[in-house]
Length: 489
Image (tube, rainbow, N blue to C red):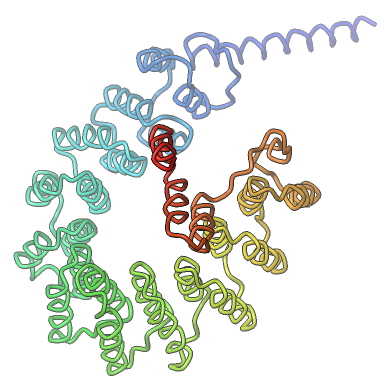
């Protein structure tokens, strides 16, 4: 009996001692007992940094309560863990607080990692603060970091600052190698600064050995962004003279540049100039793909050249390049926009017969165009084709068709589509009040009413009646009508 009481008492004492030991460990870690349980230091820091309660000063005061030995890997782990959940300003304050506490113990790689995170999160002010501190401390900037910094500055329209960092990379202890030159050229050309990029290439020819293909592609894209066809053609010639054959990607860039220039200045030259480029491609054994033809079809559609669009679609089939659903979409779209609905429906049927399954955009956009052109019956037929293909995602189509039907007076069909959508479990964003004729006003197209009035006017025999009908359409004031009655008397 005494032995059993003694064993129970010993077990009770060991539990008390273990509890006190756990509490003392938590106190040493956090200074005071935290309000939330944290099994590790990393999770505790992440909870403080990601918290949405309090400002930046409160964040720093909370961090000061942590009595932990910070380390360079721990700081990087916290930044990595919180970059999706915490705001960039809280991440920046945590990093600067860690830098102040660790001093020289923070590695250059951690600094570079933090800069890249800020650039990826598009907080360019925080990025510039860290770049300034990196330069001030005499740390090394990595090539990948420079690439992201240069890209961010050029996007902000501060390409001269990006070039300034490039020219003074020795102050960042970063070597101007082929990767760095390619990075600044890519960043400049992405926003159309091809002239400045050519200057960089001219002064660093010895450093781009083996990267010429990438450099030429960037320059070609840069001139195409500006719409400079002559300069883009010059780049292609330089590529050939350097023994680098332009590939399909290069020719498609040049084709887009050429088509966009013709769209503005010479729409009639769209087809012949594009076909000449495709002929040149074939001479170098580069077969134009549906992407190449879609560039041409897209520009033809923008200038409403219907016959040429249909001709290009047939030319694709005859040349052995199978049109994709985008090709059919571009042709059908321009047909619907110009009122050729029968021809458009015929081409849609051809596409389906060939076994092509278009994307949701095909149906959404064309249904919207048909509803806008007051061809709701054709829109319903197209919607039936969409449902037969079992694509799913019918919600936006219902949201367009139901209001159009109800406001056009066809409440029965509108109710039918509503019940069908509810039965399928489709989430509708249009209001159910549309189905109530006492709430929804039925609007008839104004243009159609005016045309009917003019037709009735032309059918009358006397010219006086025609004038009176025209005046009714124009809705003249009542005073002028009284004057005309008095004159007739």
